Image 1 (cartoon, rainbow, N blue to C red):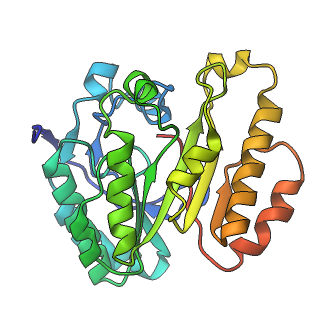
Image 2 (tube, rainbow, N blue to C red; image 1 turned 90 degrees about the horizontal axis):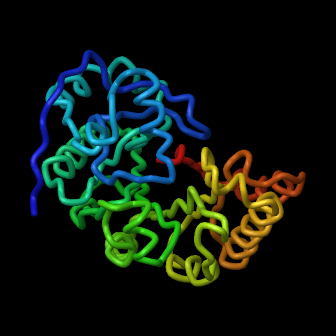
Length: 279
């Protein structure tokens, strides 16, 4: 079902982000219908700065109606400084069930590609197959922190089913598009006890894996061996990626020992990496 959005206007769209390993970004939608309850960092910030008042308001997305005009105006101002543009750090560019948002995202990616600007995108929705018609420099990814639909229904209640996310990503991979997965924010075993190898194996076809801990959660704080747990999970990601010759990135604060730098530096010298703040 194609869900309906409301609209807002903004004075600017394209900006340099301070997010870890980000470059430039656009957020052409306010709010996110996926309604994640980890809690969601983007919602916490939106409430803190008065952009939304409540969860119920947040999950009713508002499209930036002048996004195309803004981007057309702003690309010439910034293009010589941009390495890549990420969609999105505070919303989802392919929000599940919102065709209008997906279509706008594809159009904005097209505008950036026409200016020879690479795009990266991350979603908890479905990646449209016609992204294969975009620049082959682009990179598209999904967030995947579980394969358990019960967990998704509880913590990512209005997002796309995990199998559907993986399938849409695999379809792009088969067409030669560079793909990645963000395994973040990953929960501790007192929240859900999972077979981590099964999660990694489900996305073994991707080119890059990003892994990060779950922050701002009382349940994680209550799990006393959390540091050892996240170190162990991060090592599994590193070894998995090294064995399969994949890029990887471990988010700051996830590992608590010095081996992180030693084990990632050689891969990062060869490829750009991008990480997202836990949406």
